[in-house]
Image (cartoon, rainbow, N blue to C red; front, side, top):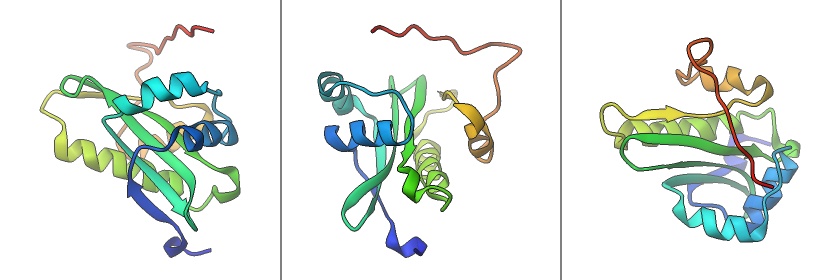
Length: 138
């Protein structure tokens, strides 16, 4: 497969594609109800398609001025190791360079070895100065 086989489009994934890609990529599953409530609040998103099927995605969420978070970076495992994650993150970071106001803080959570990918775009660990924390409602 060549790079031309994949099309990156600026679009929020559908609820079904979003939920499928999260699970396929090893991220936590999300309910249809939560996806329906959350996805319309996306600031910017990209989807990578191959033969019309969504096989990768990434989103930016936040308050549109002060704070942004890059989330949901996911590529179907059968299409990984082709630089698609790099294309997704690159598109999101390019969007932030074009639209973010001075002083904007852009964060993300790097699972596993993903920090290597994010460091290519200038992201740095916050530790030891600060640590990421979360509260997950089940």
